[in-house]
Length: 128
Image (tube, rainbow, N blue to C red; front, top):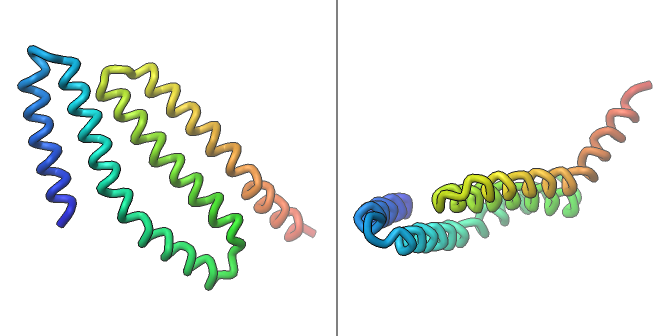
């Protein structure tokens, strides 16, 4: 299972970081960032299966491709934002992480406006 490889890699790099951090803290941060990028790339390849499933389900449910793409973008922004914020926190930059999270929330809100408008329009039509 791939998760075992990811956890093992995480443990090894964590031990290396703990050993190196005492003498070369800048190298420890670089190791953490490299591990983050490797893990991100490892799981990124698995997303195509999920995206294909979502597209098939949306097609069967007769949901507009525009709305599905918007929802997928929102999910993507949420995951990437969380990932970026955690990397910044790991590097000791909590303030930067907070700004990344704020930007992610704004972008999600902007993308969600058409969906919210559709839901409100549907509700208004149902009320006599």
